[in-house]
Image (cartoon, rainbow, N blue to C red; front, side, top):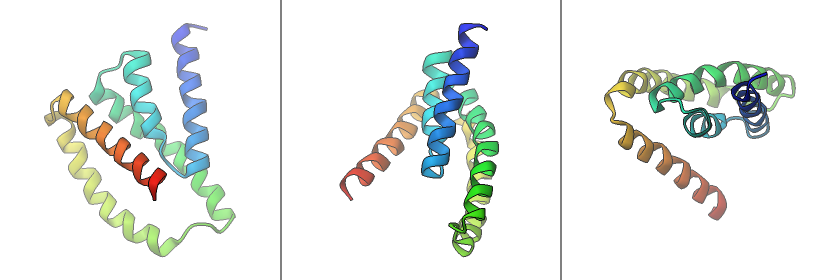
Length: 119
């Protein structure tokens, strides 16, 4: 097995654990890992992260549904806005310069972390 395969499996294990434990957040692990550990271009890392998170989120959702811990009314409402946001974001991804994309992504992670720590 190549070094890169071992890194990818490790990234997957950590991402799956984070996604299952916290309900999401795997992208905050996958994107930097793909960029800095694998050397993938930022745009491809963001797009690849989405495709990685989808099956993980489906599995987590099935388990959460079985345990009756999803507020379906909230989920449906947020999904409606999320669909529109996803379309806009996917179309903008290639238009945002890499340094700006990194600053936005890093800022969102830092602000989210600070809010979780101090709230």
